[in-house]
Length: 277
Image (cartoon, rainbow, N blue to C red; front, top):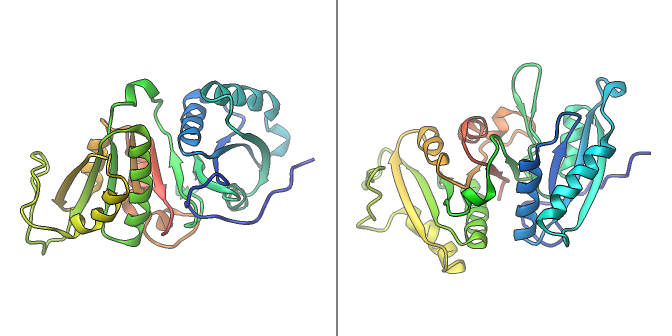
């Protein structure tokens, strides 16, 4: 009998009532993903929900989740024995699964589904999600910075909130990447990282967050042109990349926006796509 699922959605406003949801299926378990999700939940005072996703297309061939649940719980508890953990089985069509995953979620880890057309399906705009692509070592990543990509929109505020919280929680540097408009008077050399001589819109945007998190060291990079290349480059030496989502579609590439869609495919570190503010 399948557990009942809440239909209430919450935003990325993190609290002790929110869950870090990690998705597994019949494929071999990735311990690095479970560990990343458990560490994130532990750092931010969240609980953890481990979900076995079973698409309804071929329910008779779905692997039994029991062994995978036990293995995933063991990995998560090795991070913190006090971590609150719940397990669930969800089956159905892609859109229904993604909707169910956002119930009670502060962050959904690795929820992306590639459709038959090759597009990405992702949770709706009210839920932040993370993509842990290539395996990462927690100890090796500990001293690396958090990188956040901004464009001055409301989505940037959501991304900043997550980036500052994470940088503060792990006591590391925050690298803020801002794509300047062609009309901007001030230009910044990407390689030099020199401080601006006059206040910029980015400076004003950061001031409130810097007050809330005075212990976070901030390095700003402002540049002209598309942001995908610079964010991909910075992701090679980052512990986390945070971007906002553009567009208001719920379950497709258009709802993610060009930059976030590119980063979840190309970034060399875990990526969080922030929900709408």
